[in-house]
Image 1 (tube, rainbow, N blue to C red):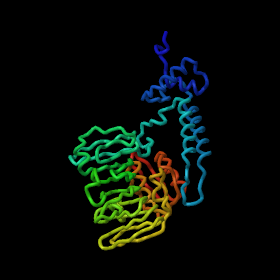
Image 2 (image 1 turned 60 degrees about the vertical axis):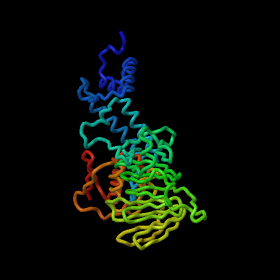
Image 3 (image 1 turned 120 degrees about the vertical axis):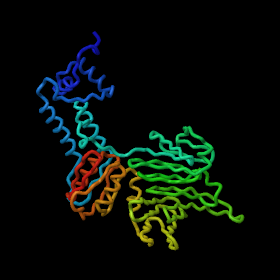
Image 4 (image 1 turned 60 degrees about the horizontal axis):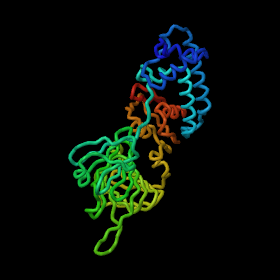
Amino acid sequence: MDQRDKNYSIPEIAFKWQQGTATPEEKAFYEQWYASFNDEELDLRETSYTGFDELEKSIYSKIGIGIKEEIKPLKSKFFPIWFTSAAAILVFAFGFLAYQSGWLSFLRSADPANMEIVPGTNTATLKLSSGKILQLSSSKLGLKIDSADLEYMDGSGIVLDKTSAVTKAMEIKTPNGGTYQVELPDGTKVWLNASSSVVLPANFSSSFERHLKLQGEAYFEVAKVKTSVNGVQKRKPFVITVNDKAIEVLGTHFNVRAYSSEPSLKTTLLEGSVKVVDGNTAKKIVPGEQATVINGLIHINKVDVEEAIAWKNGNFQFSNEGIERIMQDIARWYNIEVVYDGPVTKENFGGAISRNKPLQDVLSSLEETGGVRFKIEGRRVIVMP
């Protein structure tokens, strides 16, 4: 008789495997079930054996040992930098234990408050001038726009009305929990952070300057393009507008943060030169400087540029920031709601952690400082002093 015809119980096989008593046939059946990604809830309490408490204690004990080896208490108000390799070891160890025990319902809790909230992904939409909205592929690195076509950066095409797409303005937009890379017609590269958008023409060649509109946050590497002015070759201007403010690009690598929910516009320069204009006021910054535009004034400060572009490199990184600013970034990336219960802590926080970690890990790191506590209810995070 084929083993698939036998009346196997997945929970009981899981328990027997944990105890070392599963037969080769049972193990083969379990592996086949596991490979099929069956969505069956694996509640060991419904089986006939009485070893659930022991199994639960065993799993928690093993997971706890792994966590203690990776996480060390901090004495400062800084949360730690956890490298991806260490996280991968812990995730692998946890996955191996779940595989051996079969206790997959631990990861599929019926209580939404206990569901793991995963980080954002590579996702965006493309809005054409006709109003049609296309969902861009999350499996592609980014979108490439030129005067003749629209395609992904790996060369694969996008099926759409090419005439309306490449001759008129378009908008690339990321949601909460999304990032995307775009290569513009002139070769300029743009990385969009979560909840951000750029509006631009499909072809820069028909105008004197290269111009786009930004909302949210983006990192730019602007291509150097020459144009003829009265027979003289000059660099073609690249201008970014945010509401009534403008950033005239004289160099190449810089970051712009301009979320509508925040009172200021921040431009951080890594390479080249940038001029920030607000009404009749204009100031130029050099690499290592940040221009902050607020209430009609432009302030120039020396900053850690790595902190400004940490999001592009896959990290959260802060230096003496209040919890409200930190939670704004976390909320955008994990697509969650943040509310405050009681007075907001006056503590400042600093440090770095990977944006590729589940939300619970990021919040746990902040809690280790002792300056703040969190409660998760579904996709709602309550911040407590």
